[in-house]
Length: 270
Image (cartoon, rainbow, N blue to C red; front, top):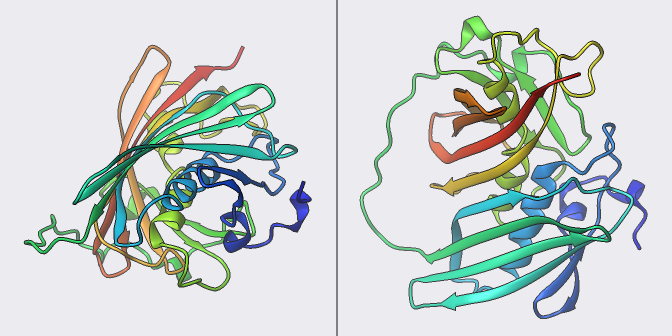
């Protein structure tokens, strides 16, 4: 078992141990809230799937269900089912488990590169403060975080994110994007609730607690997650103690990198 405090970079986090051709083990750093960060499990699950895929294919979408909270004190086992290998697409299913059972069920689809039109809805980045002008709000040494003030962002709840350390050419951009993609949705969805007071989770006097239920990402264009990317999410509905957030990830020049949708359990604390 690898000591959790030895993981200081994303490259170390994503370096899975191979047990068989379809079974891998991942390790976790220590998190201040105790549970494993959901973006870690999604990224490691995608990394496990990629290890069974021909290098000519890249991930274009993933759909994941968070089944139960993971603990950073245990290794995470990733079992890959090779569902289909076609000429243009390949499909994988990954189940992540710890001693108490499954913690994640992830499906990933991969596609060979195809030529075609490249179109995106434009975004005006000129009114959004650059990350260098904002205060640090980091919660991990693996990732830098800068929150965009509400009055400066007309598109929703915005956060600048980037991985720390050096980019490894052997690690796909999609893995880093998957890791960062779980950071913003909860904050965006909870803002719809009429009694939200600005705090949630483990924060003092929080009115809410919750957990990610399911998570989907569509990867559009390659972009290094070691460069600043703007994650913009909007909460669009809240019903049955479930909030839903829809968001986009942009490069600093406005290129649309990925689209993210997440449903989150959001209950009022008792």
